[in-house]
Length: 514
Image (cartoon, rainbow, N blue to C red; front, top):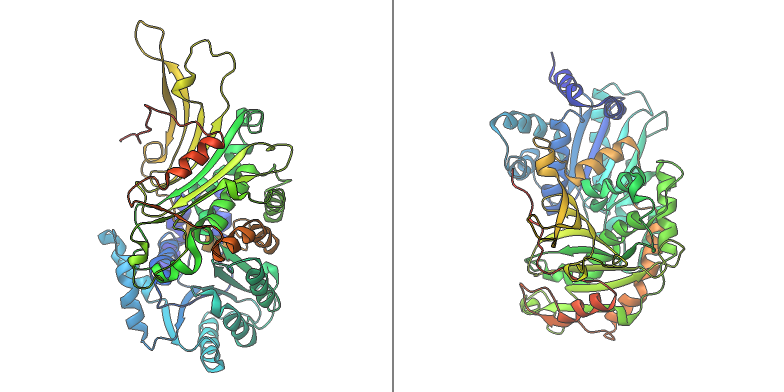
């Protein structure tokens, strides 16, 4: 039995029937995956490891797939493989090492510029050699271009792909491109970039990746909301007091100060990752699970967001940020921000959505915290203990738990805060949660755009934040200093309280141990 057949048998042994159908989509004709920017950090740390894990699970059949790395760096195939290998063997078992070797043999490197005809003609030639070796009929081959590159070169690279590297005809085959954030720096630059790429490719060929949409608990949001009866009557302004969507890191810019200073925490995290999560929390039930129906509902949410009030924004910059030699001495770039968004529709009128993100804070986590209103007629006098909350921990220690008030065990009638807890590490022992990039690359091969950002969605997101960002860029709003390892500026907690959030005192959720 050949290695490819063994992989398919191995994969089919543990996949559900529906997932087998997904996998079978990947088994028709040759597939070329081209990673542009192959020598960069994103490709080495995220893209190639994600491809390796898909290969290891049998989703990339070595009899059909070939992977090409393209960059300006002049190195050999073996040099690229050597650079990637270290990122593939981290935490790998001895059984995985054989898979690593087989995977690396699928990779070929092509060197060339990002705006020159010669390099892309050579790349097309190498792809064609692979397709011929797989006996692909004209028009049936598939080409996936992953742009692990800065957005400044997207237009030139997309132009080169369009002119020299497209699938030659359409008989079931395709050419698709994956572009990474940031998609511009404001509405004008995003629209310009969208126009440049949109003149070359149809929207169905463009996959704007936001890796938060590939996270397990984010993908669970639609199931939680629309497949569970008890959430349906509660998920509205009558019962929910406020919603927090939080991203916290316990480290600073870590040598990326120069890059980060161009964008800041709002462009880097809030305008994309957290806003995408907000859409899934707030959207109405789609007509079906078809990608366009889901994305239609997300756009409606974004279009219902009211202009941001400066009084509901707190900016921060941690002490020592400007000590980085790549950061300007008088940088006004925020490393922390709390922003309150308000959705003007029947379901969410009056409910603040609090988006909070920061670097160099006292913990590392990403979570959604839905806080419910107080219980009317508090006969147990337990209001001071805290409100009911539904918390979805996105990372680390994926979990969801419901904070509720229960009787304290014992003879006295006293109350205490506790939780109903679904911690994935405990409930799903032995189940490996895929990395976000694995899911999204697989979706791209399948042609499923549900977890990618559509052009009108991107425009609506920038319309919300561009006025605020311009006021920050012009120096009209200044970040407040805060100590590394703290919660951020004290003014942010004051804003939460003003928005109606009541902090629970004396209760801390502790992930259960196995």
